[in-house]
Image (cartoon, rainbow, N blue to C red; front, side):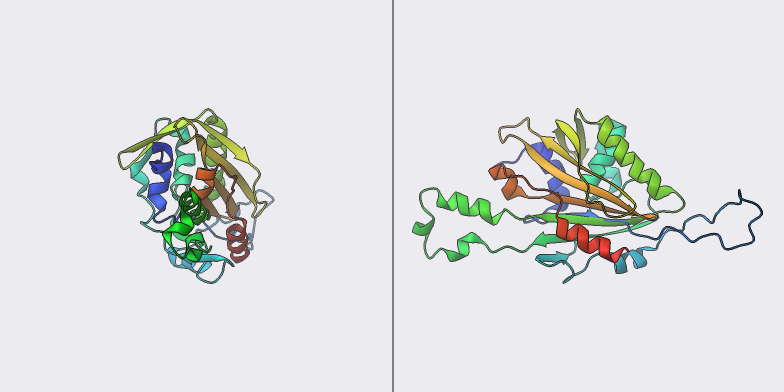
Length: 264
């Protein structure tokens, strides 16, 4: 079945064989001023970003998310310069859905977490077992798994706060939808809506972007960006099986929980 261009726009960047990867930023909130401050207006030291090596130690790894296989992002995260939107203010939303950290991070790294589910066709002993429409049902069930890209990005100063604000502002400003392009592949989202966030970290925003203009009906993608000090964790989840069967799904809670635990 041919997927709509809106889904391909985001999915092809981070998904291969139903695998999706997210870039998440992690870092501390900066040290307190321990010097000889002269008065209450003395400036605090600017928060310093973590290095790429430090982020790689903090991002989720194999065996750390129960029920999920964790590994590299299939196909890698697209180049920031190759992901654009017709309206610049909507770019942070599109970047999140393609695994790109918002703003101008000093360092970033990514991983992919794929839900580990049994393939329903494994129980079939012959093609006859999957006749009369059962084959299509089995295929849909085999694709009914969450694939989440996690991106950790660290920022200097108040960069993490500003980057998160840019995403939150974009969600509100682009509620009526927007068009974008990635590596020459164009697509349109008909609406963007804020969702309930996980409540982890110091601040966060969760949202969904939907393309319901094609013959397949509403096709949603889900994302959440969470700030932990001067680090942002970006999560993007896609479940093609759920999309095809019109079943609701969200950003993978076990993945968020496992990543948040490593950032405390």
